[in-house]
Length: 216
Image (cartoon, rainbow, N blue to C red):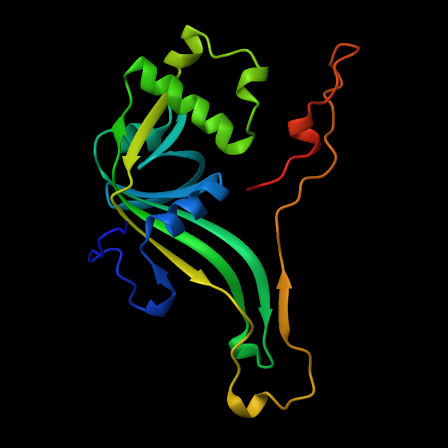
């Protein structure tokens, strides 16, 4: 399946890097866990980083009930949500052609407030699983007071596109003979050794999902 190309999602530059199929868009969203949410209040633009989770064809964001961003988006204003994964530094022979290998998604739409208790709990579970799979079953679950203090919004994944750059540098033909190294420095997110909370009771061991943590 593919997302329809709209005036907002059609790529104006380097259109060949555009992808509108669900597999590409959802794959990028599932690998990340931090997005940037753009919106406008009284003519002033804001871009706020926050966590997210994808469930089927919906994107959930959450935060404090006092969050101005969430209160604004709950009123149905237009939002633009972006997610970017950086895969490598592309080092060309010329300064002009240096680049980055990346995968990114842009989502447009209007969010709705999630007030159904079952959907809200499912969304909170999805947030936990998006970041650390398996953690939800190993912690105290939110109580009624904490749920009331948490706002969850749902943004439908109906207007979205991906943009992807892969491969080696693309230099001017006459520069390929220059005697200098060119290529790609791959980058990836790597977890280091977990650091235990100093207030852990004796005998509590670090869980395997923390020891062997890695992104999908």
